[in-house]
Each structure stands twice: as C-alpha cells, then as structure tokens.
Amino acid sequence: NKKAFLFDLDGVIVDTAKYHYLAWQKIASKLNINFTIKDNELLKGVSRVRSLDIILELGNIKASQEDKNKWLIEKNEEYLSYLVNMDKNEILPGVMKVLDFLKEKQQLIALGSASKNARPILEKTGILHYFDTIVDGNDVTNAKPDPEVFLIAAKNLNTEAKNAIVFEDSVAGIQAANIGKMTSIGIGETKTLHEAKYIFENFTQISTSFIENLIGEKN
Ligand code: G16
Ligand code: MG
Image 1 (tube, rainbow, N blue to C red):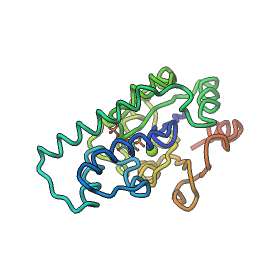
Image 2 (image 1 turned 120 degrees about the vertical axis):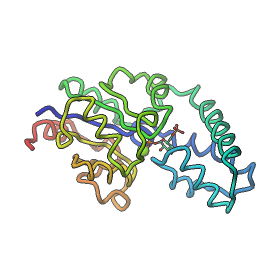
Image 3 (image 1 turned 45 degrees about the vertical axis):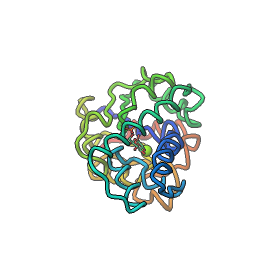
Image 4 (image 1 turned 90 degrees about the horizontal axis):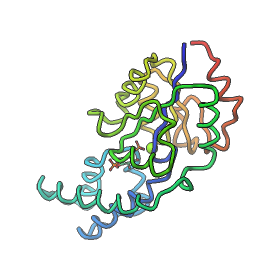
C-alpha cells in the first residue's frame, strides 16, 4: 500500500510558463499575431505541437506542415536559450520542503509532465535525483486530460493508481488525475481548479502534517 507522489513540472515545480511565453512571442510577432500573456494561459500543460496550432488559430493563419515544423524548432531553440540560466533559485516556494519531507519519509516520487525538456530542467535546478521515475512529453501519446502520463508513472513505480497523489496547476492535469482515479491536489486558484480534491495556493501552504496524513491514508 505504498503511496506515490506525482508532480507536474511547469507551474508546480518551476515557472517555465514565462519562458514558453517569450519563446512563442517571438514566433507570433514574426507572423504578426497578437499573442498576449492572457492567451498564454491557454498553452499551460498543452503540448508544443498543440500550442503552435492554438497560436495560429488566434491569428487565423493556415500553414503548411513544413512551416509548422520550422517554427516548432525555432520556438524550442529560443526556449532552450532561456533554460541555460536556470538554477535552483527558480524552484517555486515551498517545493523543496515538501520534496525533502517525502524523501525523509521514503515515499515514491515521480514527474509527470507534457514537456520534452523536463529532464534538463530538473538537472539545472538540481533536483533530478529526487525522482524515482520521470515521465514526460517524450513518453506519452495522449495529452492531459488523458491520464496516460500519470498512469505510466504509477506503473513505473509499481504502484496502483489509487495510491497515487498528483500535484497539478492545470485544469487538464487535475482532470487527468481524477480520470485515473488518483488523488488530485491543485496548486493555484480555487476558482480555476475546483475539480481537485484539495487545493493550495502554493506549496508554502502545504504542511508536513497534511502530507503525513496522505501517506497514512488507507484506500
Ligand atoms: C509544459 C507547459 C506547456 C508546454 C509543454 C510542452 O507542461 O505547461 O506550456 O507547451 O510543457 O513543453 P516543451 O515544448 O518543453 O516540450 P507541464 O505538463 O510540465 O505543465
Ligand atoms: Mg503544469
């Protein structure tokens, strides 16, 4: 009856959304598409390919597959240029305390992210070794709200889905956890994440006794 704690990356462990935004902004402005920080919300937890489609839809642009591939590469190169300077200071408040507590309690820890750049981000921020398995955009065919990413993580950890606890900042991610019959914990605003079983504004609001109760819970 071992518990597994599954973390989303962007918006949960680090705020890479700002870098995704800057990189997409470069592509959008080249195509004369008005792409605002509010539009960027639509891309959270969404794959790179789907993100480009959403931006092109905003600008009413139809493009060839060849052009799209070119822009996808360009966007990623730009994004990677922002990651170069990442370090442990970019880990969101309270995350380290929770990761350390889980390790101290010898709990299983996994990453479940849509990003194909998850590994270098964990490396640069110095927390790669906390994760017993990493499931990312390179491993899945179905995007959240499909539970695939979290189900693979649970399987890699030899745990049943019902023993998995998912930290997510996106609505699609919370839905993925719920569909997978896992315990969903929303990190962000209640009005957005109300489908989650528990909601916290950020990790500084999560106490060690709350985590301890999750570990001890019988299913
Ligand atoms: C993250 C971001 C998305 C991004 C996706 C793919 O998902 O939230 O905005 O489009 O990864 O990223 P990449 O272009 O690096 O493959 P998550 O699941 O970590 O929140
Ligand atoms: Mg996220």
